[in-house]
Image (cartoon, rainbow, N blue to C red; front, side):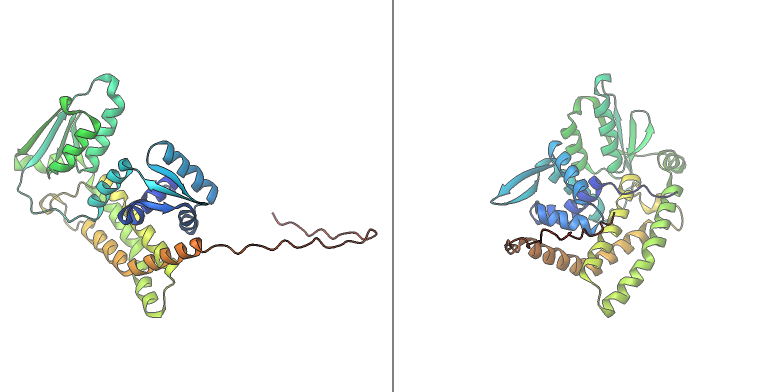
Length: 303
């Protein structure tokens, strides 16, 4: 199945999370538009999406003199930090064999909150065991508390930490909560797509890889990996099928990001300098004199 086309909003969020938020959360508008253009996003689509993100509280727009900038809001900062921890944080520690079980029942008028809670808990590695009951192999206590606090659902949620399941039932429960074969197929596709890119990167580093290309490759390798924290609970090795490709995909991403880091930073710095450089004032010349009996030539327009 073909992957869905990348959305402008997701592209912007990925760029903010990877490059802007760690550097203070500020992006000059001109620089941001240049970067998005390199990633295939036109100025009209970029400005429209940035405006919507501002209205929804993800960005603040400010002006400094003749220039404008966007600043990541605290709401967006927290979300991007959570995503970075999930994506780039350390892999799980050895598993102690216990589970965290969550049971919740929200009032009918909080249906939207129920959906948000389920989505955020899935991001933390929880799988849907039964309606209103989720389970995870790792507790992630601090992240869980933050989610329950932000969504204001404490009175409706019960958390049971340190639960032990019948070992004979664990495989059946894992199969019920997560489609691991389908996730592994996605990892295979990722490796088949970006494995050859790694070879291209090594060749490019020997012969001179343009900074812009390095940034673009690094960005899309990261962007396409973002699907996995949304679907993969990152289970302990004891619960994974044999020949699981998740570790190989992660190592591939980590190597690509490391090798292309300097190229990406160089491209962004060069782009920032070009945008910040004041444009020379254009001289206004007098229009050419046209004889009254002459017919001006109209150039052909290309569509």
